[in-house]
Length: 190
Image 1: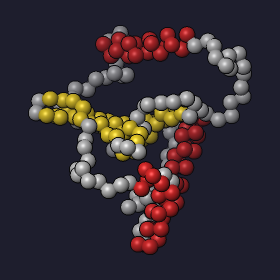
Image 2: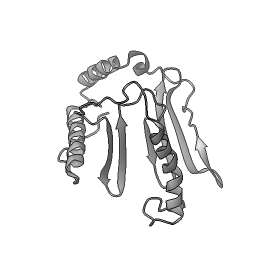
Image 3: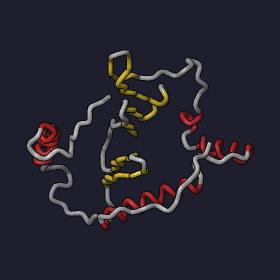
Image 4: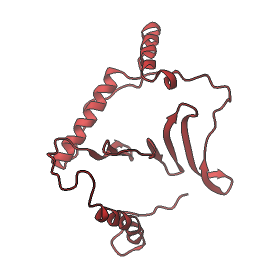
């Protein structure tokens, strides 16, 4: 059992507060040191948020934190991280050479030992993934296969509508400071 650490809920002055400060101090120091650059002193009219931080509540004590920006030159941050009571899963950007890069932290990686694991494919003879060489062109082949085999596409119109509703709800929630309930849903494709 992983102990619960009330990292952000403990009152000021406790151990968790001290741990928070360890992470916030360097960020504040860095921010105060940034004072130049090619746009120093220029004022820009902001028409669209370039950073989004949202908490998505899926119900049944399941949450997602969305931290998105296009305001960076480059990043090696993982595309997605999943956290659970028994471990964490990091999904890094896929590479053409290695495919999808997964890392798993498990509280029982080996008997009595917690640690990070990098899963290997089940078989070393994995069929080539057309999405690596064809990029978005592989979606056309997927759509063709769905039409031919009468299957639901992975990227359905219902899915797109639901994602758009989430995006607009995040914007509305940010502007109003209130929770916004969703009205759409979708059935995942195959």
